[in-house]
Image 1 (tube, rainbow, N blue to C red):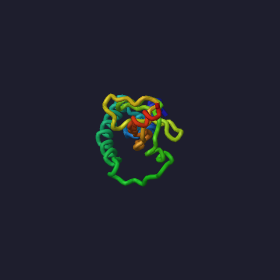
Image 2 (tube, rainbow, N blue to C red; image 1 turned 120 degrees about the vertical axis):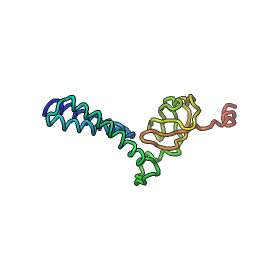
Image 3 (cartoon, rainbow, N blue to C red; image 1 turned 90 degrees about the vertical axis):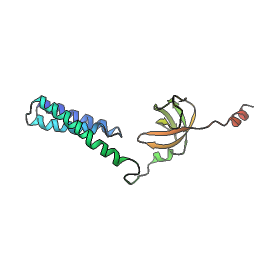
Image 4 (cartoon, helix red, strand yellow; image 1 turned 60 degrees about the vertical axis):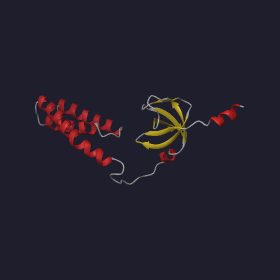
Length: 162
């Protein structure tokens, strides 16, 4: 096997592994294009043409199949069987912020003894939910919890202080 084929195959495997860690269907298309370039390298096609095929195949796959996959994966579009997991227990629970959640940025919360990445829903732009605050878990999207800051009960805090 020539070195070009090994490099293309390594790139295809690395991109597929990267896709396995995400839920966005982005790098899989580049991985498939790298497989096409691997085949060209194996049959001895010059590197310039391999690179051109990789670029064109990537563009075509992203432009055609990514919108289709996103449309099919949209909630409510296709009814895939839902397999309940232990993680589903977190929905509706109260969690404690362990790393600030700022605006649309990802922070961390602890719920049921586990630390999760989390994003806030319903927060004002630029609002920060500081560590130590309590939040309600609304949903799980991929590997992140969607949380909502719990309203503070001023009367309850006043009673505790007195």
